[in-house]
Image (cartoon, rainbow, N blue to C red; front, side, top):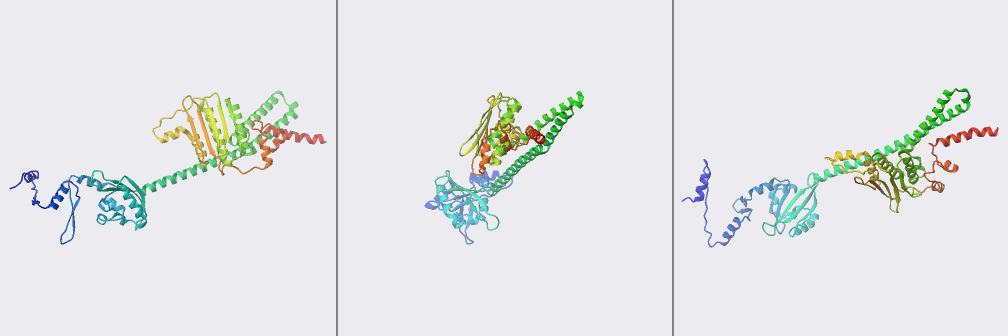
Length: 468
């Protein structure tokens, strides 16, 4: 007699007849068989091992967990199940591949036996922790052939499964680590390139400023002296139109000389090299107010310890770029410049009271970079190279505050200056450095001061006449 279950299987087979073998065994009195049957129905048996003349044979049971087994076998992470002794009860192919073993060799053996002796103690401790809570560890696995692997093992006790079982997930991080190293290497290369570009920019500015002073400025100075001498000696021989033209030429010469001197100062102020940051900052603030009409409240020390050339140039460029942005965008009635020093760092603050900045809502990081502009990026990179930080605080109608902080470590402090030079620099203020006393002028080679050059040349011409 065929049971109802067998009849239903035949009907579902359509044109194919399913062969169903029904094995009935009397389990009365056989407690072991009853226990195996209950365990199998409860889903707590993954496989059966049968003994035969040809050896042991593993029979895998397929049931409702079949789709999950397929999922575990298809993922790119290694997964395994351990018992309390650390024996591998189940492992997918990826787990065996990470350990360079076959699934047959891995399942049924102790997991620690597949690791070198110096790693077993750590892994044993990790398994002990995995019985109680989630635990993880990164290990470097030496491959028999090929490069080593960095693998992260994550252990967690199974909550909805058999007791005293641990789930192990192995994630290979080798490619990720290599990619991160490549990114860091590229970032470091870009930073070095940026630092080199900024250094070349400063050197080029210094060269151009020197050429404007040594060549263009001197030619204009001698041209002015020649025109002045011609005007003095030949004024009576010229008509009114010629005299007016000559006078206009002298005025234009002085204007061009002033523009050349200003441009040379802006490219690279000689005060920064000769007297240091405090004097250069005072001079630039005074010139900024004269050129733009924006008053600046300055709070600067009379003397700042001489820093390295890179540090002084970086701070001066931050000051210069910030005040340029104040003039272009802030629409402020005034600004504030403050430099303070401690035993550990030097801080520069440039603040305006204008319309401020609003955070731009960009669709991509590239747009944010473009909107910020190269000025802010250049300042940030300069300060970063010195181990400092640049902070910009702003808000709509709240003004903008730019703060640059640089640590005064050994590399940022310049070597001690000779006593004579120190005395000269301490006795001269920035506002009066260009029009200081005569003996101080001789100690400060401000070659752009054409008035000083003309007076020196005039006194040299008049001195032989007095001797005659």
